[in-house]
Image 1: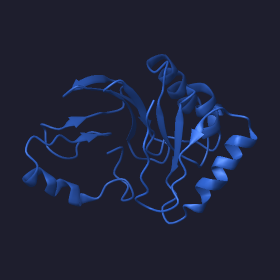
Image 2: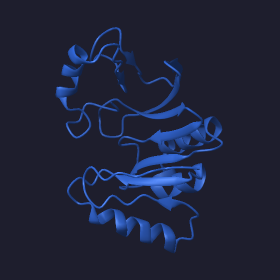
Image 3: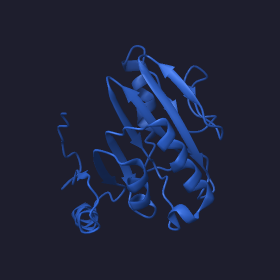
Image 4: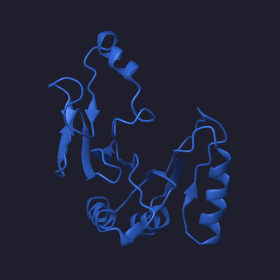
Length: 174
């Protein structure tokens, strides 16, 4: 869970702990969940958990602590950005520093899940993902097709996974 906003954290997930043996929660900030969970704070860290490598970047753009997660597992590398975006893009020093850090940690990025409220084009150019999934427009999925057209018009060489409705499924194979 990247941060505590209600569109990223549904408290019902905490009920899974009783139903799923050995469940492990990964929090993008300190203080939530159980002490046995994995918590990321403002510092960048890399941890290995159950065959996953998880690397965080942190920001506090809207006044709350948040991490985005770079995850490596089973030969894939993905980035779930949470709300890591900025209307000033690379002009924002924290955003720029985080993106440049990720380029070092992920010379090959397979999947990139990104909000589309700023900085995502610069992030795509820097990170060069194989596939990008625009997100964070719940109920407004028509924005994803518009984003895909923008990416194509800019000549960026990346596939765009356009969800036409909540719960859309995609198959990634390479």
